[in-house]
Length: 333
Image 1 (tube, rainbow, N blue to C red):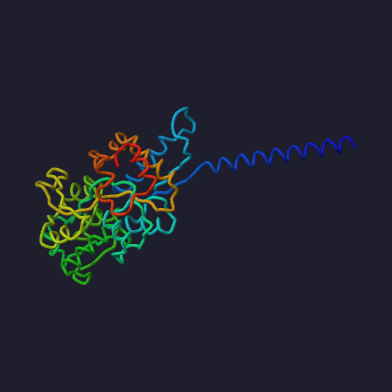
Image 2: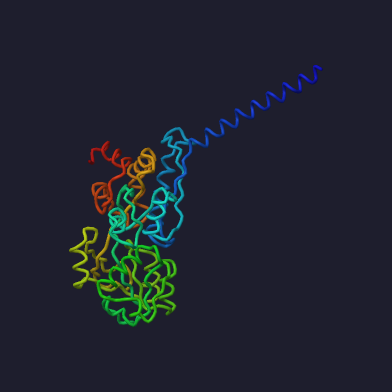
């Protein structure tokens, strides 16, 4: 009988310990927040942006160290389809943050384009680098303007990417349809430069920060060059749209860039959704801004980032309260 009582007691204690440990485990899990950031192709700057943000978030985390932020945030930034894809997934709650061109941020909030999800709940966090639109033509193609892509094999970009959207804006401005190309391919940013060098396409459009490793595959690797885009169509686009501006790709950026190239472009912006908790957006914003020198060192396109510009340039969506709280604390707003 005593043995039975002892066994029963032991089982009760074991069960109680199991419940206690289970509760502690659940509490620990609840203290952690896993966030996801939509980026772009693995050779593009968007991919670097997302993973750099994660790096700063993890750097700030206090777990395992005496100093730091006990925010419990863990971060992943996988390669995705780009701007419009990221916005769509943010609005569906599949992503917490994403990198997107400033024009698609504008259209998403205002419902002014069928090419991106109408998302009035989209919220701006900060802007990153400028993104000129590159028209990259293969050696010997003699393409000197966007009009001269007619009759050529043109990569218009994968559906959901910012480059696809901007290419289509230019096509519309010039009255060009896919029927005007010898072929209209939908290669991703990872595939297009090698396809150009392999002679499978003649040109592609690409909205991306400068310099870019993918672009250099084509320019430095097989003599492709970047075309000036500053004609009447581009002038009208810049005049009519606050998210566009002319920019210069300096001579010497790539081997074939022997003189300055003038083109137009947008800003890369970091966005979220109104449903993402204020404290999470605050901590992510703080992690980047408190470690901005480290962030700048992670890609040449980040070299001149300035908080004064990052909190306003290209931000056509309302600012997320979590970001606004941090900026107000710093006296920047």
